[in-house]
Image (cartoon, rainbow, N blue to C red; front, side):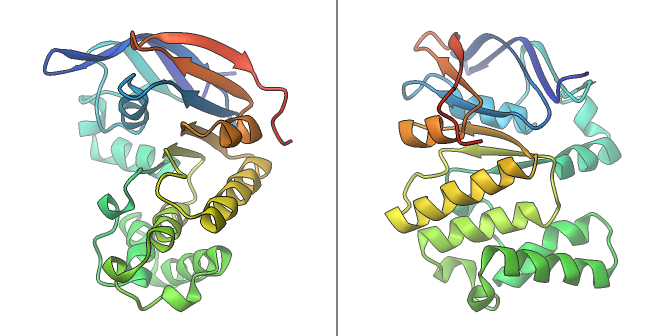
Length: 233
């Protein structure tokens, strides 16, 4: 079977500063892979590359057999489909929230998919119920707490029903209660067969969630790939 994500000798640099060096890795459909490593090793850059926000300067990145590059994502239809299938949860939720209230935020993605207003409303209502954020429906995103913003950002992605979720430091800045909720939520997504790709410094999250643990070293290369026998199945 074709891997869902396939990286082959991927390299990337910011203005001459190396961020990723010869990254080669396949991620299968339904697999949960957690990336760890020191600050500055390239984890966040890799999360952005997997979501098509930056592009390999060397090597190739394929999603479900199709190359993801600046050129291929210029095809509007292809780009739209790709971003529906891969949902990216930024470390800073403020980057994702821009509408006047939570309901509009969540309905934005399905509306851009060209769904009927009836289906947009159904998806929005379903996700609001799933995330238990009915009380936030009419609230402006900038009035929400950090944990509430994270829930809304996730809801926005889920409303498009992606096959894969890519999360950059998902527990960062959250209180203990919200962290516990998010871990439980990610485990439910894993159990539902979603492909999860996560970067984190949190060892507890990594060993609870991952099928495989990938460590990126200070030299911006993959240092190790190990099966995680402690993962919750």
